[in-house]
Image 1 (cartoon, rainbow, N blue to C red):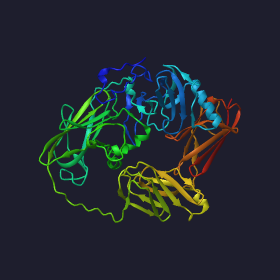
Image 2 (image 1 turned 135 degrees about the vertical axis):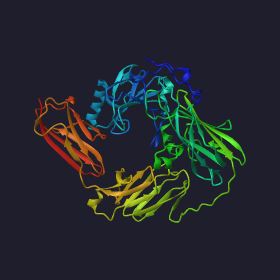
Image 3 (image 1 turned 180 degrees about the vertical axis):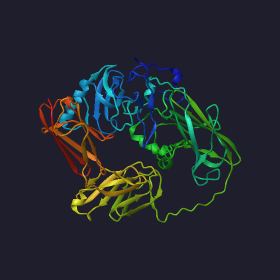
Image 4 (image 1 turned 90 degrees about the horizontal axis):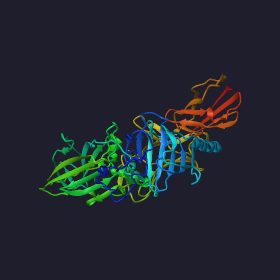
Length: 562
C-alpha cells in the first residue's frame, strides 16, 4: 500500500522548490510508522542519516521493498548499520534498510555464499543490475538489532543520485504527530569582547518561562553589540516518548528574519560540522545540545537556508528590541520563544588569561607538537579558530587539552618506542583514556619499521601507551565437550577481552571454516547448523580468537551429531 502525502503537512521550511515523489514509495514495514529517531537528529559527531522506525521491540518483522528496483549493495559488518541492503530504483533514488537480523532466503543464500568464499562474517557486495532485481512489496529481509543499534528497530534512508540523504517523510510516509516541539534551554552568545549580555561575555544562560499555550518567554535581557542565540529543543510524536529531532529553525529580530535552517537533506561529507553547529564544549561537559542560531567561521553546513549577518543581531544603546525563535517539526507543529532585549551599553572589564604554559595553534597552518618520545601532528584547518591548548607528555601519557574544542580533521599521535624491548613493542597500543576512571579505549595502532607506533583521533583528549599481554577469554554458552548436539540449531560462545579488544576470530569444524556471527553488544559468537557444513557424526571444533595486539586464545572441543 502506498501512502499519499497530505499538503497540510508541508511546513514553510523549504524544500518547496524540490519536487519529491509522494506516491512512489510505500512504507518498508506493514505496521504504523512510529519513529524512535528522526531524520537529521542530533547525534555524536553526526546528524542522523535516516528515519529509525520502531519494530514493537521485536526482531524478525518483514521488511518490504518500498518500490521496484535492484539490490545495488549489501554489507554485513559488526558495527555501523550491521546487516544492510541498498536498493536502487528506476526514479534515481536509493533506499537503505539497516540493522537487519537476516535477509530473505534468496538474498541470505547469496550473502552466505560470499561469506564462505571469503571466510569472513564481514563482507560487502555490489551486485550487478540484473543480478538481484526486486519488486514493490517484496520481502527482502527481517528487522533486527545488528551493528551499532541500541535496540530493535529499522534504520531507513532514501538517498539521491549524489548520495545525499533525504528526509523519508518528504516522500509521503505518514507519522501521527500533533505535538509541538519542546524547549528546555535558551542561551545568548557574545560575538566579541565589545559585546555583552547581562553584563557578561561569552555564553550566557537565559531564564526560560513556559507559557500555558506551549510557547515560551525569556526574562528580559540587557545587551549590547553583536549577539547570537542558541536553543535546546526536541520533538515528540504522538505514539512515542522518544526525544527526537526537530525539522526547522527560524529566528526573527524585530520582525526581520535573521536565520533559517531546515533538516531535510545533507551530504555525509559535511555531517561532522554538527560539532560547529552545536555548542561543542557544553555538549562534552554537560551533554546538553545547544543549537546555535548563528554561523561561525568554517561551518559549511548545507542545512542553512537564509542568513542575515550570519544570524547575529546588533544591539545599540538605549533601544528596545524583540528576538523570536520559531521551532517546527515536519508536520507543521510549532513553538515560539520570545526574548525582549534592552539595549544598554556597558564598559569593558579586562579579563586576564594565563597563557604561559599553553601552546598556540594557528588554525590555518599545520602544527607539529614534539615532547620527549611523542609527536602530535595537527593538519591545517583541523581547528576552526586559532586557539591556546594544553599540551604535555608524562610517562607515555599525552595530555592534549580537554575535549572541548571541535576538530574538522583527525590528529595523528606518534610514539617512539625504541626504549622498549622488541617483545614488549608487539604488545603495546595507543589508547584514548575515557571518563573519570581513564579507561583505555583502543585506537587503531600502526607499527612502523623504525620502532614507532602511530594512531589517529578525531578529538582532543588524553592518550597513553598501554600494554596488553593477555589473550581473549572464550567460553561455551550452550554446550559441553563430548556431548551429543543432534537437536541443536546453534552453537554459541561468549568472547571477551579486557584491554585492546577483539580483532578477529576463526572457527573450524573438522578443519573446515564455519561462519560465526559476532554480536559485540552481547559478546557472543553464534554458528547456525542450518548452514549444512557439518555432516560427520564425530566433530572436532576449534575456535581461535585474537585481540588487537595479536594475543590469541584457542578453544577446542569434540561433539557428536546425527
